[in-house]
Amino acid sequence: MKKLIIYSVPVVIGFMWLMAVHQTFNPVILKGPDFLRFYLILILGFYASLFILKSLKIAISSTTLYFAGFILLLGIIKLIRGFLLGKPVGFLVVILIAEGIVTLVFISGYVNEKIK
Image 1 (cartoon, rainbow, N blue to C red):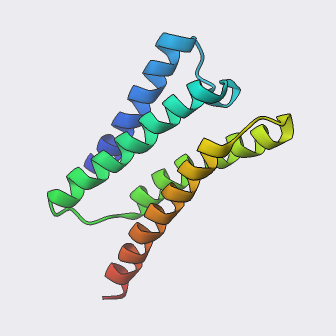
Image 2: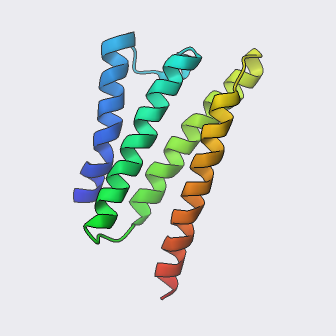
Image 3: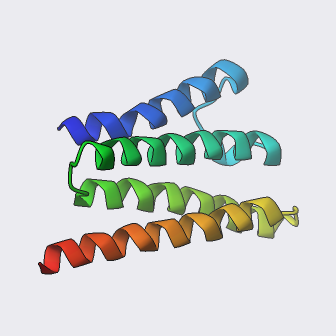
């Protein structure tokens, strides 16, 4: 339960920022730079909480992978929407590639931990 609360903090902060600045809870309808700000709040907050848990020697659980998957899925949905609308999506592609690499590193650590 503690992990769920810790991982939910960046999501709550991101959506509070979204509501305060743009008066919406739907991040997919945001324009490019605004969505990137929201997405970076999610990513940086999530990985900061992940590193805090790692420094406290708390093991990575499946909850971590679900949160990482949902954040990655949100980015992929916005990427597809950007392609369909013919918008430039270069920064989002770079962020998604970096996030995918970091997620794969954590998944491999999680799998190695489960095997032991």
